Image 1 (cartoon, rainbow, N blue to C red):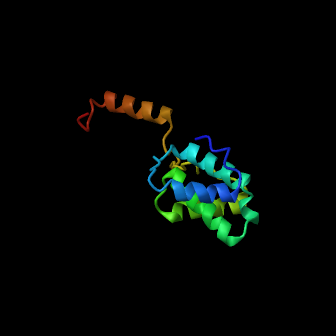
Image 2 (spheres, rainbow, N blue to C red; image 1 turned 30 degrees about the horizontal axis):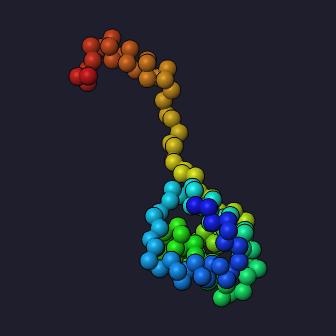
Length: 120
């Protein structure tokens, strides 16, 4: 979405009043997070008074389609702490391998020599 023409709090307030009938679809997460970060920077969110922060938060909720305020609050907190809003990388637990490929081949060869005692 290109919302670069919205550059003041007054315009955001007008947008929120007039867009009650408009429903926005959720975006891809990465795209939404980039937009949130850009919006927070554009409006200098960290330096706004509390009332105006609420307007920006509602604006972000409306445009991104995030229904739970917690989602937006978490992203704003992340922006406040790091200056960025990013997707967290998925971290999978990878267990250390006990047997090497060579060990597995030796085991298969041993099973073959003993005429597959486990029925495989």
